[in-house]
Image 1 (cartoon, rainbow, N blue to C red):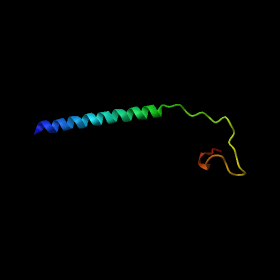
Image 2: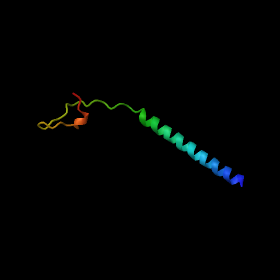
Image 3: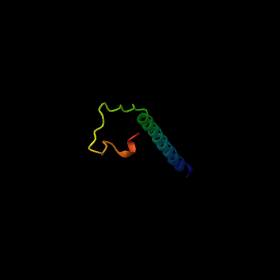
Image 4: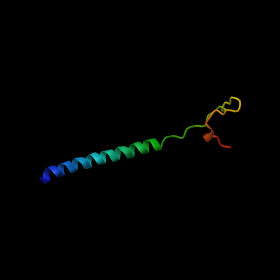
Length: 59
């Protein structure tokens, strides 16, 4: 009875290790991307309405 339980535990450990490695690779690949460049044009306005959300506007 110990044999099948050990095999299942080894399979679960391998699956967990693969999932952890894949997660770390995805985070490192996504997190180390380039910083977006600043827009080269001035933002547009329509009267008093800004071209971007108010939460992103810095005064």
